[in-house]
Length: 86
Image (cartoon, rainbow, N blue to C red; front, side, top):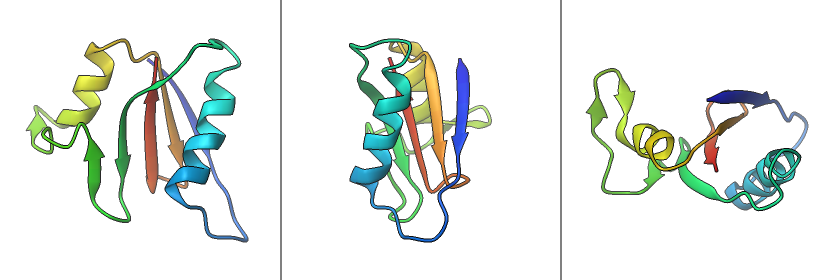
């Protein structure tokens, strides 16, 4: 899976704003991209929410995303928000 890291300084970023930034980047390679899985460290929430446990050393939501068409992992602000896009 390809990985992109983005660092935003000087202002707070909401999950919705972070996802929009990720969507713009993901659409460069795939205009029909969509979020397959995501994680929000600030609220300790993930989607799919039923996969909070780990599989090996990896979070369940990340394994799910990779196994369900995830091709791009975008990390906003060193893990504050992580999105896996198709």
